[in-house]
Length: 162
View 1 (cartoon, helix red, strand yellow):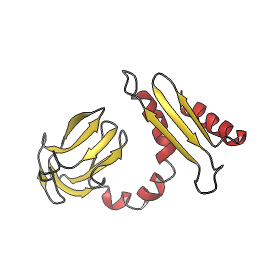
View 2: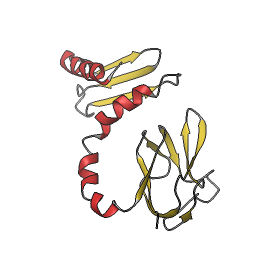
View 3: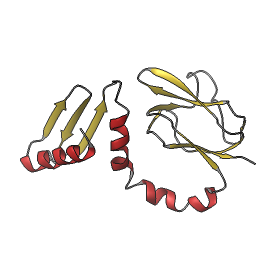
């Protein structure tokens, strides 16, 4: 199911007057709740079930959910951040700054890093993936909060290579 089909489904459910619709297929589940109950705003939740071809669907849905907020938020900082290298998430999952809750964070703002150093861990499908630096430099900014969900290609860190 692509983004257009999901959008058409949302429109159809909104027009039908149903307050909630759940759709389960082999590779994903969708729950759509409409504003039928005045105390809850319209909500759309898309959950991916792990499969061999699952990464294709999240990449298709990512622009629809993040596109409205991202340009406004990133438009101003682009000029001052242009000299920095952005380290982006290679996968979808949950971002963790520490290897475990009782351990210190892999890196902090101001930390010097080298190529191959572990910067964070991203949990995807109950697997913890070490995210290693491909550049050497100094961490200028950490763009994601600990234990936050991240999308594919979402900026995680700004690194000053000088």
